[in-house]
Length: 308
Ligand SMILES: [Zn+2]
Ligand SMILES: [Zn+2]
Image (tube, rainbow, N blue to C red; front, side, top):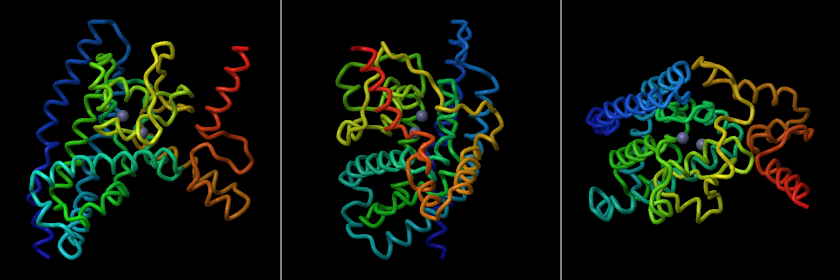
């Protein structure tokens, strides 16, 4: 058993080193907002986001430890290419891409499956967009997030390498939550997730819904058809289609689970109840609400009518 517990104790999480920089950068951005007399930082909103971030650190201690034990069991007993991938340059390069690919699909499904959305929606519920929004991490998501990565120890990547790369990806995703950086040179915007791309991801404008799920590389969105360029003619409106108007972390963490529960309760058949769990947010058994794709089609039809 010790061989499984030891790596948890030894894990030197890169996020612990990043936290002072997070605080410093948030302070700088808030000061810039104050100087510009912008209302982009709101104390209650940022306090709620930071509370969500702190809560997620504690929950993650448990879920990450459990994931590490599971990863270790798979890696030790069933790992396929352990020697070639453990700590080698080839291993790190491959892991960079495979971790980012895994994140993309985990994130995309979190927007496409109502049960997962109930967990992920926390990250989108702020109507503000600044560095503190990055800390608005989902609590419930930690309960399933690591399951997406189980195929990596099976390939032969050591568990601590995987967790380190997951943390590096999370650190990268911090700085993209800002309005202060407009655009980078074309090649960078083409390859990487940037503030411009991630602003689109946090938009509630119908045209932008469920776009740009990238972690570090935006190439996955380009490859799998979910990429959307930020359009200066369509300024981003931040938040979710039905805003929750609360700064209470417990309500932020649970509101969509409650809505989901109510929908399941009122669904007439077992099959409808299941569809509420697994179909995209907005699906309803009586067609009274719309999914993001349906809203987009409707929006485009309305726009085409106006343009005629
Ligand atoms: Zn998202
Ligand atoms: Zn975000």
